[in-house]
Amino acid sequence: MKRRQLLSAALSGPLAFGPAARAFARPAVDPVAATAFDDGTVPALARRLAAAPYRQPVADLPPALDAIGYDQYRDFRYKAARALWREDGLPFQAQFFHRGFLFKDRVAVHVVHRGRSRPFAFSTDLFDYAPQPVPELDDIGFAGFRLHAPLNEPGRFDELCVFLGASYFRALPRGLGYGLSARGLALGTGEPEPEEFPAFRAFWLEQPDAGADHIVVHALLDSPSVAGAFRFRVAPGAETVFDVDARLFPRRALALAGIAPLTSMFHFDAGDRVGIDDWRPAVHDSDGLALLTGAGEQVWRPLANPSVLQHSGFQERDPRGFGLMQRKRAFADFLDAEAAYENRPSLWVEPLDDWGEGEVHLVEIPTADEYHDNIVAFWRPRAPLAAGGESRWRYRLHWCDRHEWKPALATVAATRTGKAADGARLFVIDWQGGSLARLADDAEPPLQASASAGELRNAVAYRNPRTGGWRSSFELAPGDAAAIELRLVLGEPSRPLSETWLYRWTP
Image (cartoon, rainbow, N blue to C red; front, side, top):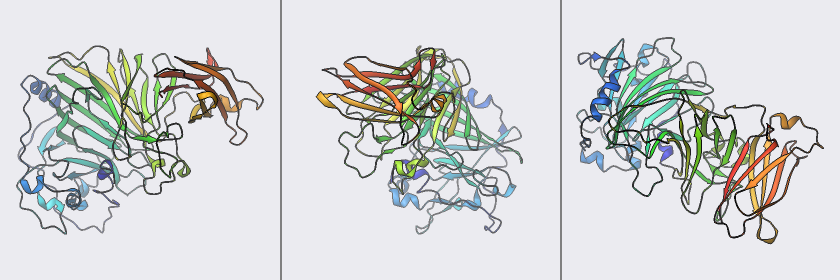
């Protein structure tokens, strides 16, 4: 099992809480140590933190917990009946993760109600350790938490999202399972120097109102280079939506910052099976990077599992959105009854302000298996984030099945490639939807195809009678090029019928 799946599979199970559940005392929210709290509290803490030298968190985990493995950690199960707000009949509940195994750092948790913040205390009474004995522990804090809500049906509290490990978090839209992750901030991802992993050190969970359709979570981030304050407004649904307000306070200039970073896995697909010996037709959490440019161009870049690490930068000004998407939705696309890759969500980032000049950055890292995330996408501003100041980023995260940008445009359904004559490569792209679907079968839509090197030949577009959709194909004679950027769009330059397909070919 993937370590990434540990959040949902190993630590959780069905969460249908009913009135027959055994009653427990309320979780230990300290009734005395209350302090004033508002939307300015965490930014003020982050600003003061950034003004001081970085202090490495104290490694205070008891030796017995520091050495436990995966199987032992799985036994540390939070008691569902002790969920925060369970006895209050509220539309959201919270459960907390024990420290240990991969999750050793202490995270402080606070509960906010009516403008007052109180610590939420750790206790072994909150956890079921069977078949292991209950350990003797003081207040060691938590590793993270997860939220539950009636996501899929009324009255049933399903897992909604998880915050666990560094600044990682994941969420579920209605009807889908866990897949890719988001992060608070990426620093130096894919660069030759070691990557820095900022971490959420404390959380504040605002108690929701009885009829609330959302919940608010605040987080304090820290690392050697930067401190930060995050506010998440989380609304579950067919698209589970996070409104994110990220305020960063760099200790030093950050030239390699990644804003709104997304992390996923791509092992192989029909367009990238070099060296693959696997019975399944595809294995991935995401199959493409989607981009809606500031100029309104809709772009699709199929993901790759390259032989060497590769970076792709899509220069932009004020992008309208980008995301790592999973477009394949049929069991036949993967044939994996256990992993159910067809049920992995897509994640779309929608800026809520003008982000200026920069690039949507894609990092593709070679991987020999499906157990490690190897795809990262984020926004990198052109100007470094200045030391000693504040950098603010507001955006909306859409955890979804699909996300509509320009419904009139046909979208890429599949990219396939294989050997052609004379050492050339054959590319076949299938399209679906949009106004292209309404063309007559004998229509000849214009096709705009280009390559940065090599020779393109025999570019055509035609109706696929077996699917009813459209298909385009061409051959690429690469010559001695080390890398070739390919571009294809159907329609006239001023009136496209499809989104823009991009592809990087390497030998």
